[in-house]
Image (cartoon, rainbow, N blue to C red; front, side, top):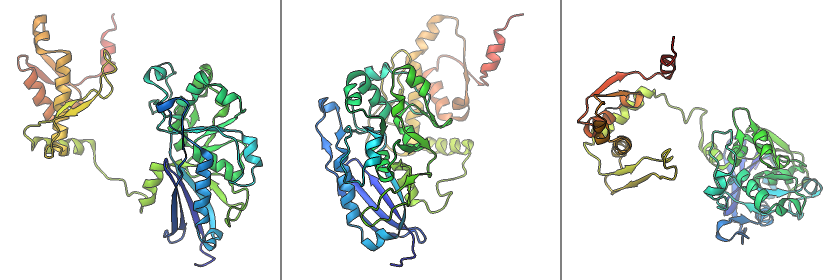
Length: 395
């Protein structure tokens, strides 16, 4: 084990366990790795809806993992990366973190409300403002949980004077660096909800207008940036080495197997994709799967869910699933506007079929002709909203 070889320490704070690995930065070989169950689950004051953990037990498990790394390897660590369970949130006081001498120093915190937390019911989520984000808000998202605490248990925030919040990984980074205000990456921030990844900023205006404590939110930096330096010597790991802002666990899992920058890339045009899927579906003359495609409900029935029935050990090929999905889209359309309904109107002479789904998909066209066989269908119509808007203009 050469003293000249630089090593990196990786920390993964999972839902049930903590894992640490030491990586040779030059050869990309794993030097050593160890893990330990954190046993951090606690009883929630909201019963079975709450999924909470004790951050102190998580830190204890982390310290035990670090202690198992050979001293020689720890002395060669030149940087620390942190990842773990996303979406969840906890609260703490920044000034206590800056005064702590190491991870064994007890700091008062809230519980960690994990990504599994179910206290934010659909009814409660419906009362929250819509985020300006590419992600839909859901229970277990940190900002949703904070909204719930603000409205139902504000004392959790105010009684201890908490002025920081973040994921448990952000807390670990803050403890290692002695940060008075937490720093996180865009990956973790996005998982909290109410974060605009295009502008790389929290939806502070939306949140403030609805009584959200925006002062608790972390500073956000791009993925791969340093959050600070290791404040104190840590179990033979030298101080003043960089500690990177926490990253998402899924992203890091992919990064661990990435060998070349373009490993995940492939050149496939949309036209090629249509051809491939349609070819596979056409080889399956029929599909016994019954699919309800309403993943997002219907406007008149938002609570409607999607489902698949009739699954067997032999009908789940990509071609059969794709064919079943195509058929079900048209079948759902027919339930909304049936042949009987159209013919009873008396004025409908034909159906104008437009859009890329119909243009590119013979499966959809075949199903359309089957369910609306009593009405002529005219293809080749190019839908253009701008032209439609222009046609309504009067001289």
